Image (tube, rainbow over all chains, first blue to last red; front, side):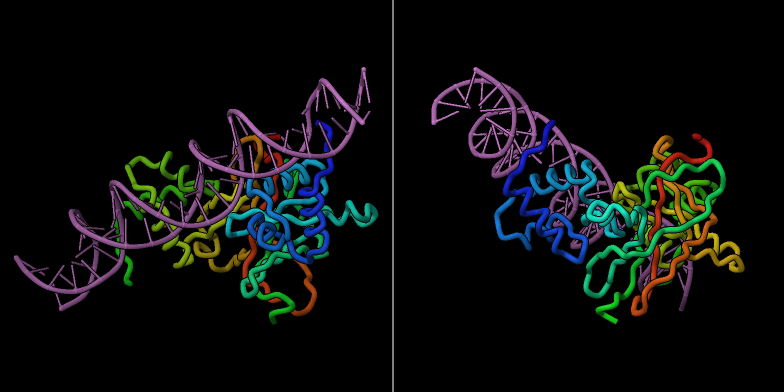
Length: 125
Length: 125
DNA sequence: TATTTTATTGCGAATAAGTTGCAATAATAC
DNA sequence: GTATTATTGCAACTTATTCGCAATAAAATA
């Protein structure tokens, strides 16, 4: 299962890298300047997730959003579990540099976090 | 839009109240001992949410889960934004009495929180 | 460079969760 | 007991995501 470089893959990664927001499949399809099939976009994104190039957030709307992993760009700032913010006005989702912190009862082994706060974002307030 | 008491409504609230887990529509349909239409279950649950009787959690699987609001039972312990835990082994979601805490940059107005941590729960570890 | 291998893509169809319109039913008010 | 209208069941619809399969095209190999 060696990965191959394709225009599709590059275009999607480029778009995500230059976006300040997490993007959904349909946002990517809308914003990208080449024609890519819906199923392909999902497959590319899921591969990115497998390779830890991007991470997936599921919002309250039940949709998947994708954003590049900052920790991959700069391994030193390991912001593994951070909050996401969903603005109800401009309907965007962004990664915040705010770590998710908690103290859990014993016996719980946390492997992943999907934390989305929603309200009005910086730009809209 | 005055609410009416129906067997359906009572049965669903009973089930949720006696469950230690948050339940999805299909879990409710499976666990309940009367036959209720899928659309009806959703409508009842959404009404409960409107009335702050239950709250909705959306997990990484994109599905909606519902749990009774503890704050409604006991208004003194206002656990408004708490963590939820999704066990990947027994595939359940539960409310934890752990508050979601964060310090956000100025300009963000948080209205709601949907925070689900996942891994292995107390029972399964 | 030509050929082979197989990862990737596009297409269409399938799946699954959730919602909606509408007519029938049944709580509640009168 | 009757009228009002919230609630329900049914079927159809929408939307997000996945899957099978054949065609395409990177990358490896000769």
